[in-house]
Image 1 (cartoon, rainbow, N blue to C red):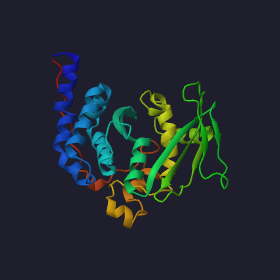
Image 2: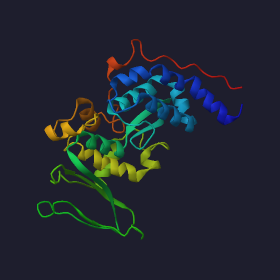
Image 3: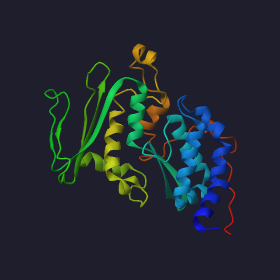
Image 4: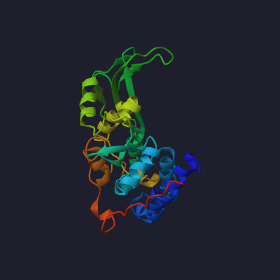
Length: 273
């Protein structure tokens, strides 16, 4: 069996089999617009593409299921820019860590139905940027999209609410971003999005701050709910994800009652032919 085929077999007979076994448990906490079969296929797919992630899942299957449970209850797609899955080492042992991406936070804002659009952008040193609170309703950002924009200098985010009003505008400079990065668990790891996709993490930091000022929800609102209660408060899991339980800033807890009694089972090792 070739290396690629062996990696696929390892996933399908190990972590992949466990995902399938507990798909019903994941489905119990998913918002109604998420399809469990699609969610499971995405999770297995990202494991197949990343042997080191598979190894981490083999070593600590509970960490994989905890990350997937968080993604499931937030209604975000695992292994995408909505919700990253990455291998890390904690106290020398490999495990899987889940991180809400900036696109995931934007999705949660849209789901609440209170915002008609969400703007999250980075500012680079050669851009023209102006925002004076009380003078400007929202930032004035002029970009030469086809020229050299320079280094990352900052990021901003705001939402245009239903009816046209502008939410609070979040503006972050390099110092703000550096503080957020310093709080991130494993930011210097070779697998950290701070190293592999730095711009996305600047965007995520701005979106995360915006999420504290506008409604967010794991459940998509239908047209009737949007008209009747567009400013519904965020649900408890979302508040946790955006205000301190975000895995890229600390070890945000996973609800103990969502884990089977005795914890998740060990994943059987698949012998190498």
